[in-house]
Image 1 (cartoon, helix red, strand yellow):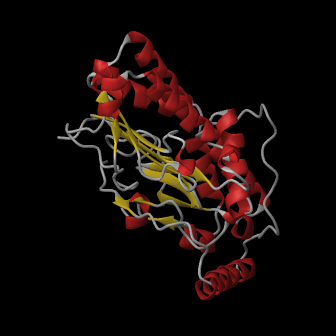
Image 2 (image 1 turned 180 degrees about the horizontal axis):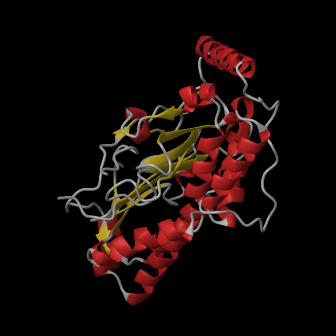
Length: 333
């Protein structure tokens, strides 16, 4: 089933005090009411899964989570498959006001950990947990929702919070890899080098350094598009095409792509890569870098973009990382 995507990207400023009070109070009231109606509310988020933990297919665990929910919980975090919130993405949002650490019991929280681990690699799971801790006090302060009824039709699980939107859809979303557009980012406590995703900027800039003068003129542009401009389009891509690169340069781009995809589960990565190969391969991809927001004026370009018939990957590293990813399995019409 194919759905339109609604994109929002507010800057990551702290929530205004009045609004923060209202959201927190509302969540507390909802949690208290849930406890009165049979929700075994945990006092804090459960521990992460130990390294090497084997987990079931994420969508299987989504169904288990759904079946474990009480009636009040379902009313709060389960919505129709075609609900508008299912297709929204943002760098800073809660898909429902109820927080994982406040609204789900310990067994349910472990299931949510298993789902998150199920849609990530082991390294990716650890990295996202560290990001959540730095950006909003940890896993328990994030939110998740289920759209549709797992096991009985199309469904999708979505987890959101500051600098994170991640999905498990069991291929319910027609034409989309990763269940639809996703977001990741990080605001490191300290300098840029402490950012959990700074290594991706370093790798991307290795590609730029490998370009010759004429190639750099094509690849380096003055002003980046809006970071949330990630609709896959037909042609008219910015930057330099991989088809204009040497074999060694293409290999560097391939390494960047594999590093970018490494935090996610193999099945989603394969689906995304297969779509690229099925629609022109790497030759059709374009790599662009942008002069604006160059932190430190060091010409290590902090904003860059990979684009092609089935994907947009927009990385904004200044003042901290916001990354917007949209992989389709079919090109734009």
